[in-house]
Each structure stands twice: as structure tokens, then as C-alpha cells.
Length: 120
Image 1 (tube, one colour):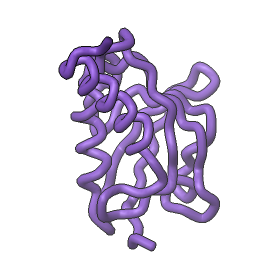
Image 2: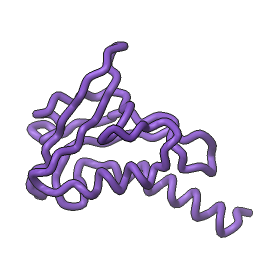
Image 3: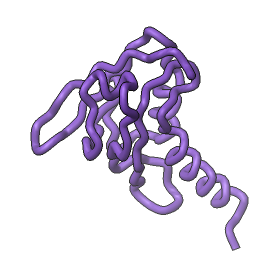
């Protein structure tokens, strides 16, 4: 049986995986990710990989591709950072604001500057 604390960690992990969806809280970004943490009950990130990019969305216009490994968000490294910190940064993007992703694609680093779009 899971303790309340353990159950909260499981819910937090589920929230992290779902919350990086195609939309920020206010500004539309247009991408989804899969998240790997450093252990089952941890929210400390190990890897974030782009799993979907919405056609015509700001992420696609900025050059983000499915399969990109996210190394950092606004210069905050993914590895070792709390998933909720990254999630809060993504969700804080307003229409017209920028979010910068450093991604690894085929052993090459790319800087992707996404401008939040109007929500649908």
C-alpha cells in the first residue's frame, strides 16, 4: 500500500507527463513530451523527449521536431531539475512571450526559440 506521500509523488509524476502538452497555461506552444525521472517516486528529471509537434503551431514554426531531446528550458538544465519547476516555466508562457529550448538532435545541439501563440 502506498503512503499518502508516495501517492502524491505518483500524482506529481502523472501531472508532469501530462502537463507538457500542446498548450501552456496561457500561450499556445504546440508540443508534447515524455518524461523520465531518476526513480519511480522522484520528480527529479533525467530526460525530456519531444513526442509530438502540432502542425502549424509555434513549436513547429520554431523548428522543434519529434525525437528532440530537451537539454534545457530558458537555460535551466533538464537533468537534476524538478519536473514541477520546468512545468511551471512552460505553463507561465503568455502569448507573445518567448521560451528557449536547447535540444539535442542527431548529436547536434539546437536552440529553439518558441513564441507563445494565442490560446485556441
